[in-house]
Amino acid sequence: MSNLLDLSGKIDPMSVALFAAVSEAAGSLGIAFLVVGATARDLIFELGHGLPSKRATLDRDFGFRASSWDQFEKLKKLLLASGLFKETLEVQRLLYRGELRVDILPFGGIAGTRREIRWPPNGDFVMSVAGFEDAYRAALGVRVRADPPLDILVASTPGLTILKLISWADRPHERQRDAIDLAFIVERYLDAGNNERLFEEHIDLVEDENFDYVRAGARLLGRDMAKIGSPDTLGRIREILAKEIVDEGQHLLIQNMTPAGILSDEEGERRFDELVTLLRELAKGIDDWFPSHGR
Figure 1 (cartoon, rainbow, N blue to C red):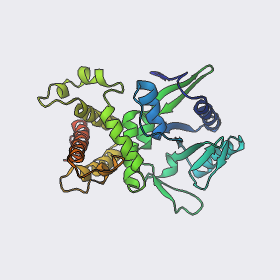
Figure 2 (figure 1 turned 180 degrees about the horizontal axis):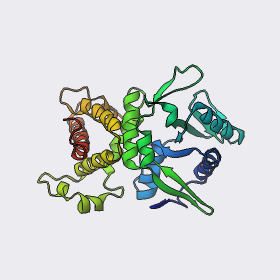
Figure 3 (figure 1 turned 45 degrees about the vertical axis):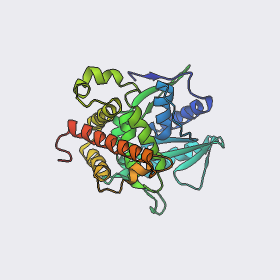
Figure 4 (figure 1 turned 180 degrees about the vertical axis):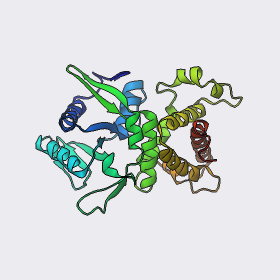
């Protein structure tokens, strides 16, 4: 695994033990996996670049590239047989050592062409896994333990942004935490290892007469998302953003991007305007790389 982000010695022991248990079980079945969700956010931003999020979480989210429900059920049974995990009332969630909530989400061949999973036995709980293949292909290698070495895949920031946008749109009234994370990611993208790239590879953004550091970061993030996203995934992302950046839109995503919602005072209006602008820059960045999208 080349270009590793070495976080060994920085991750809490329980999380390292969890990564090791998941890696052993998945590896024994030949199932690839990656870390997603708030865990990926914290590994990259907080531990990798010293940018802590104010939104703490006890969740640990994993995506498993499974070919069938039979293969995925074998993985789940293997995790439970270790004695470290227990089932919960939620089909996608296990409890690790009685403390950490662990979401296990299958994607890949198991999802079919519609890129959604219908959980057994009745198939009445449906989840979109659109974007997971894109995130997997562009995942970042992370060393979580030095001795013996343990390397895992973690969703890169562009991949994580894709997943969070789609996750929020799948259940907008239940996934405000994804919207809050989106605001955090978009506003700090340059500071998370992308500052030099802006000046070395995207000088056109710097030379813009209306240059703004944070807004340039949002546009660069959009370009990076476009590089890794499939046409179908990018079409979905553009569809989500288009509803938010028009003046007459409902702006539900933007309302969800602030923990207390958008206030009606002057400060709230400024925050609202800035978030709309950042989402517009994100969409522009996608169009920079794929001009045919959204035009």
